[in-house]
Image 1 (cartoon, rainbow, N blue to C red):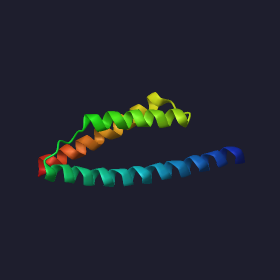
Image 2: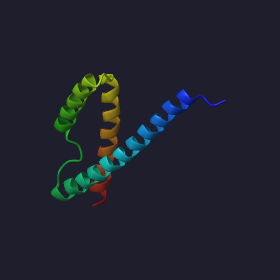
Image 3: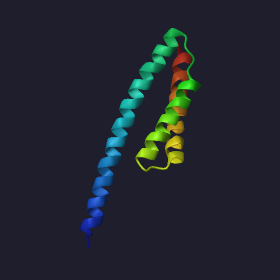
Length: 94
């Protein structure tokens, strides 16, 4: 009792989810390199000014894409918090 329309949508969702995972992995590889650089350069793990400008930029992109800006901000804040935790671990390990 396969619904071909539903299966097609689900396949598309699966492909998008896979792309998101790979994009997040690439993003975290880069932010981990940033964390190592910050630790060796004596820079703080967090950069509130950069974070706020990124959130503002993402909210604008979300509006252009017809995506809820509040959702996009929550999503980015979750990622930023995880990145800062990584940066703190690198700093504390050094």
